[in-house]
Amino acid sequence: MAKQIKKNDIYLAIALLIIIFGGFFLLQDEHNIEQTQEHNNTNHTQVIQNQHDRIDANTARSVVDATKPQYPIRFIDNTTIYDIKTGHIYKGTIDLEPTLDRIQKGGKYPYRNDGSVFRNRPDAYTGQPSLPKRSSDYYREYIHPTQNVSGPGPQRIIIGRGGEIYYTFDHYETFIRIK
Image (cartoon, rainbow, N blue to C red):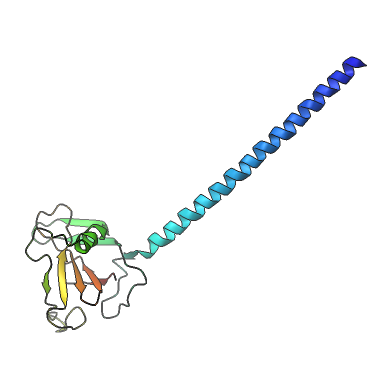
């Protein structure tokens, strides 16, 4: 009988250890699941924020029809850039942040028209200016570098004194309001 009690005590002790450690690992798993859910929620929030700073070049409306974006646009997706001088074609997403940061910090790109007045001349076909009419010195243009193009290339960022910002990927043919 004494041997049987010891054997039962051992079984009981093992059962208690399993319960204790099993509970510990179960709590640990629940903690890990909560952390994973928090991480996923954070990533989801970041993805949503990143979706707000994007626009598809194919769905961008003309500047006249465009309303002020809710968020500043950083990425222009599905852009096709054709450089007339080199014949180079670039297709993909354009990240405007480096140029916007450079402009904000007062940096200059090494071309004479970077930071110069943008005249907003009337379009050859419509006779209307591409951007809303303002005084002749209202807009400034800045070069956004184009991959594999050594000169200024066709991309520009145009900034109005009122804080509005436009992007053109085809040397003033099309404008997308980004802020």
